[in-house]
Length: 161
Image (cartoon, rainbow, N blue to C red; front, side, top):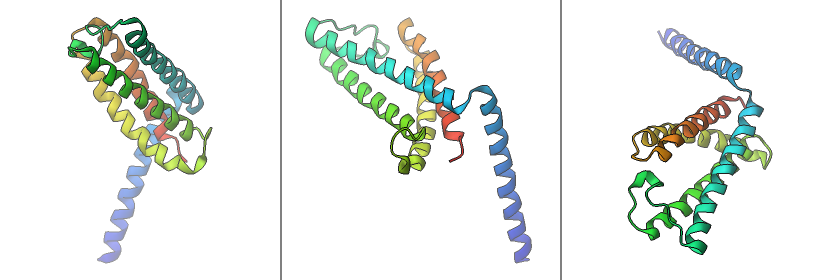
């Protein structure tokens, strides 16, 4: 009886692993791990530069495109700058996670980076949905970018360690 139970559990583990490796194989054919890392680094860097430009525009030039950013929901410049700073910090964190996963930085955090990339995948899926229902066309454009980032994060998360 116990042997049958253990056998059944081992069969379930094997089936779930085979589904995982099938999905990994499909993702591997869509985009290679190195290309996913390269594209993620480029996109996260460009988005960081974008948010940094918005922050500089607000602080030094008193330009606050409130209607264009954050779905047009923010009302004050103070709110906008807080959200932009948080976005910049999160993007830099994402960039570090990608570099950790690619082992360009310290390789002891590889498992942490893999789990974090799974979380980022789900976050970017939700962000894509949020961008699609935003009021401004500018925000809706970012749905494409967040969808691409979600696919790239999924690809990097699926890579075996």
